[in-house]
Image (cartoon, rainbow, N blue to C red; front, side, top):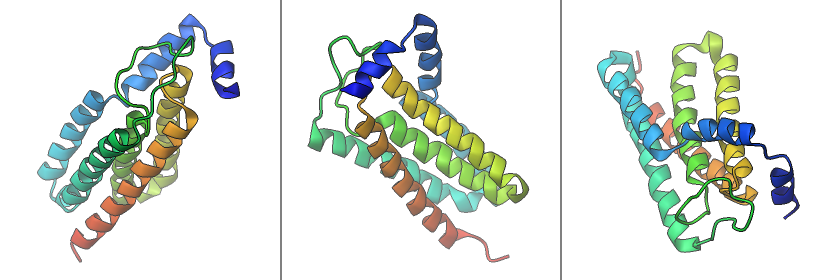
Length: 173
């Protein structure tokens, strides 16, 4: 409750618009669009093909388990004066946090493998993007902190699984 009150106390129209823009990058349709671009790129590039199965497993697994958990837990979203945006569906886990962790996390893994020299910058940028998306969900009053944390954990588990799958498919050359 104290966290929700804090978010409400610091909410301004400008910040709401800013965090609506940030949350766009975690929207399921945005993630699907970006995933399509990344997936086609992976299929097109010979060095990308080894990552395709891990990439698809990460995204599909995160989405399927996220939807299943929402249906099992059936947690209502924050209500009252807190929400700055209208959301439908259940709250736990945050789909934005799950999807952003899965998509941006696995994409960062690929980029780190291709450009190890820039791994620290890639990880730092990815961390900022994923944390900003999760925070946007809290700032806008769409989720409780535990929803976002659970989404990060769920997405992270699927990134780990996807990395393991991709590691098995790597060309030994």
